[in-house]
Amino acid sequence: MGTTRREKDSIGELDVPADVYWGINTQRALMNFKISGKTFPTEFIIALAQVKKACLIANVAAKKIEPAIGDALSMAVDEIINEGKFLDQFPVDVFQTGSGTQTNVNMNEVLSNRANEILGQPKGTKSPVHPNDHANASQSSNDVIPTAMHVAAVFAFRDDLMKPLGSLKNTLKMKIEEFQGIVKVGRTHLMDAVPILLSTEFEVYKKQIETSISKDLSPVLETLLEVPIGGTALGTGLNTPPGFANRVIKELHKITGFKFTVNQVSAEGISS
Figure 1 (cartoon, rainbow, N blue to C red):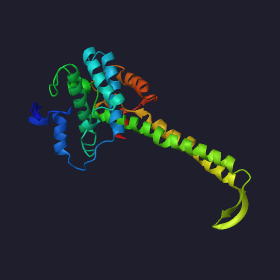
Figure 2: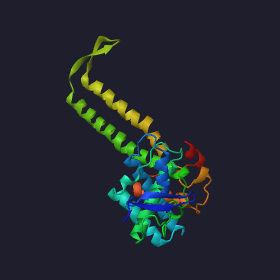
Figure 3: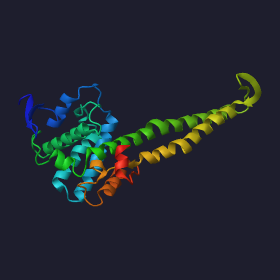
């Protein structure tokens, strides 16, 4: 077997490394976007795969994708989400077109090539599973990429911000108990002032954390849970079956555990 395979698209032909799961469009992106050498973080790639799975289930339910093709794609996407496979197959630079088209295409090619492999076909055939017609059915980079960004951000919000804040609050609570009865000199204007309990100072710290969570951070989560999926190109909803967005949201809840909602104005969700 050769070290490359020859693939063809509407622009022309190009050699792609034989062992990779991406295709000709991703290969072109690697040539066109040699900018920073930085790729998308794993958390975003997994979030994008989760969005793809939710869209896949909705498409199969709407009969836009045949069950056999849907099963193969589902196996492929689950390998990314649940097993962490193929995470080295997303080499495109983070600095690319503004809508993230190249990374969306990268995911579509990886999923379709792996699905075809599962069905006994070699990589690069685009048959029976096609990267655009099947992996990207009822979708656009315009809605998929910002939705994946929100999914990744919600996980980071919970795991990297709220959980540590919760731990900090519990630690402060322990210190309040520990410092009961200890008197220290309070200070104002860089000078010693009146006596104050050390535990009172830590009660202030704890209350500030609680207030930040309830008043400042909770509204942020509500905003992050709004996603523009189903808006497709420019928020028009072009080429989506009836009820597609709501079905995707339902499946995203099952996959992630978070209750996402659809942006009331898809174009706004895409643009912001």
